[in-house]
Amino acid sequence: MKRELPRIPYAPDFRAFATAGEKLAKLHLDYEKLELWKLRSLETLGDPNREDDEQYIVRLVGQVTRVSVETVGIVKGLPEKFA
Image 1: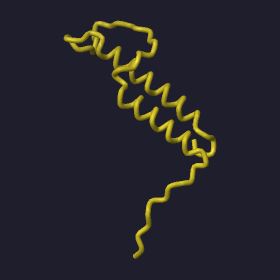
Image 2: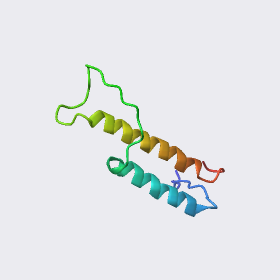
Image 3: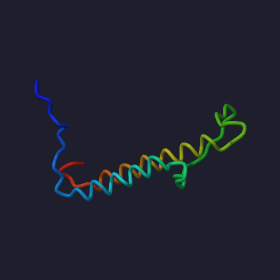
Image 4: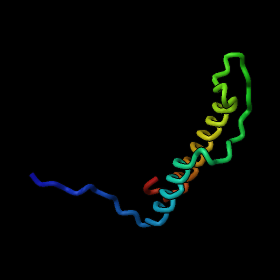
């Protein structure tokens, strides 16, 4: 049996993909340092936040929302042929 190397498609605009990869890595690894996405806050008596950090869930949702929105923007900015 013959082993083959992984097939990596040729990307004419490699720099666009490298830049997008750097942005995505930073975005996903440093999400806790991001400015929160603007959210509308509703409070209920069954509040799931931690007693030692009352804004934990709100902050986490804001961070995850920012990562998601910015990820979509980065992917949409890739050359169409490979996006």
